[in-house]
Image: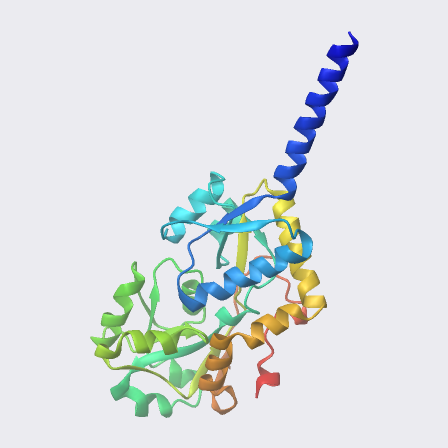
Amino acid sequence: MKVRRQTFCLLLSYLLSAFLFSVNAQTVVVPKVQGEKEQILYDILALALSKSAPSISLSTLPEVLNEAQLVSEVESESVDVMWSGGDKEKDDRLQAVRIPVLKGLLGHRIFLIREQDKARFATIQTFEDLLEFEAGQGRFWGDTQILKSADIPTVTTIKYKNLFPMLEGGRFDYFPRALHEPFIEAENHKDLDLVVDSNVMLVYPYAMYFYVNKNDKRLHNLIYRGFEMAIEDGSYDELFFSNSMIQDVLTKANIAQRTVFRVGNPHLHPDTPLNRDEFWLDIENLK
């Protein structure tokens, strides 16, 4: 009887140790990283988890999945975390970590335009002037409804890659992009003679979030707590503002010289942390 008790205790101890090891040394599966735009998201997630759960490691998928596939993979627990702009479908199906990953940079839009239209866009002085032009957007993107709610004429297509030849071909007049996006896109589409407009910036509250499975409260809380810690100790700002891509685009965007139009976002989730100023980019401090 004593031998059985000792055997049971050893087995229990082994199982407990194995459980604790799996918890403490968890590998978190995330999307495959594509370029600088996603590398900073990966780095921010790694920073947050290093604060709250330093034994956790990140593992990227071997192939690229589109957003719809990623949502399904997070739901099925094949992927632990994805990053994406907030919208109702993802908010219904997944659980958002309600801290804007890039300080709301997604809601600061400057425009890809045809080079031949630079003079036309330079004349825009009022929001009514802007309404004379048509924007191009992805049909199912979260911010497309924001533009439509602001009565901005908008042409849509399903595939992101279609927007560049559509712009070049005159199907619409401009492609609104987050501050960190259009310069590299113009570089990647040199054959289409697209440039970044230097006059206008459209601003609305819109955030990119980390999303986890609805039932994974532990991982949600670890990311949120670690993110808060990184903001409080300054390491998040250090990572963000020292990132070469962010430094480059803030210089190129020349925010101080732009005409800024602000529009509302009636589609914001009620838990959007608009009252937390430290979560959001303050463009006045960048001028």
